Image (cartoon, rainbow, N blue to C red; front, side):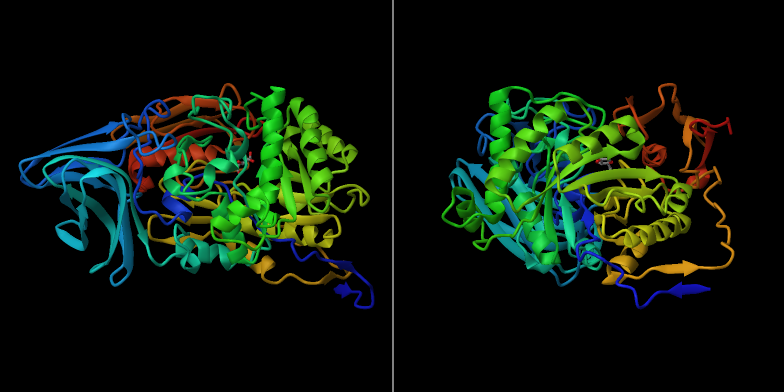
Length: 618
Ligand code: AHR
């Protein structure tokens, strides 16, 4: 018998409770939400970053009667931020290069319009032809007259005459030398028809959640950079700097991100703010305070550089909210949005669980409070699994009078079932809670059910939990860094996991008030059905101790004993990168699958020795 006290005042549920956490992980941006169809459009992929990369990644030479010599050059680049370009020498007839796109190729839909652009430089005039081919068919074609002279942008469009998910962008250049850069093909039909916009189907799935906030640009992707962000030499792996990501796309320097791939910044801070507005969501940027997390600790301690970092943070608030007469408000207006975006929240730090956080955070928080007292500041506590650090970070946030604290946890379904009362006893006087990242480890129905159960506990405590978001949001099936994820996709299809449907159920049906209720009866036991360890179905509630994946012919594709705890395998790198903490072994198994080049599990056997952390051998 369930009794609801309809006469009670109850607890108000904040309107912003359910939102999304977007991170450029699992190729969420390039090859994902960013609608660009050309991979490595600016030839910035580099072996220095990743052994399987080279300047012509996704590109190859095409010879249709003539010969083509394609090489990447950095001699006289388009601009200092865009270091490389393609130098194409053609002799004796039609020849050029092709781009293979992402996943199986460039997707085209019959009847849809596509915008083609590139920058080119030639000594003599000539015509460049661009075709999207699929097998022996051509589904779109454009001819562009290139003038003699320096770097010039050329733009045209065509309507696709067929549908494919395996297109190749074939670019044939005239005799002689043609320098090319920023070769781009965009569907005209983007979310809300924004130029340089988002892929319609993915953005639509996100919009259907009716999120009330959009946290961006990520977690580890924001704060882990091997090198100094302000070094003279444009280090290849930098902390995320929002100023690098706005303005003309050809002037945004690519970065090699924490998740092990080249990030174009085609979606940058302006696009994120715009996307939040299009979703009807609060923009919630999170910026590093110059202290890493995620297993790396190379803090920014140089006082001059820290001051600059603090100023960049203040400038971001001005960019979002400042009048058009302010320098950064003016910049926003020039980009097309004179009206302020109405930023209310800012996150300072992501899992930055190092002592330097206690030195750096106050510099940022105090500067923000002094200039923008109405902005709500979110400190961070890291992951619950980080134990004493988590408690220390929380206490620090209380002492600093942060408005909210960002908590993260990735646990097994049992944890979600047994921790429904987690927030019942939280202090009501201190900072509010932002559950910035959480997921039950796995993408099964049972995982989703455990999350649904848990969300009832969050709603019951909506007076202390102000914001909550599942993580991660997006994963390209062929470029997996982390599982589970909310939305899965390839180059032309997308679907929500069971957890997606739980999020949607809750976020599109938020009540105003939670009334007290009591239940009398027997709790029916919930059976944990996630226990099977086997091909395509492994227990995500345990940390695997040994993993071995063998192909049918006996080739060992993967083998590792996680003597150090857990490990992450970098696809293509051929090495194991040992990480601390609870990195998902599921990602590792996905990697094995993509290495094997097949999604058919029946071709492989997988041996797992599972050991529950703190438990017995299984
Ligand atoms: O959501 C995946 C990662 O988990 C995030 O980047 C990080 O904040 C956390 O460790």
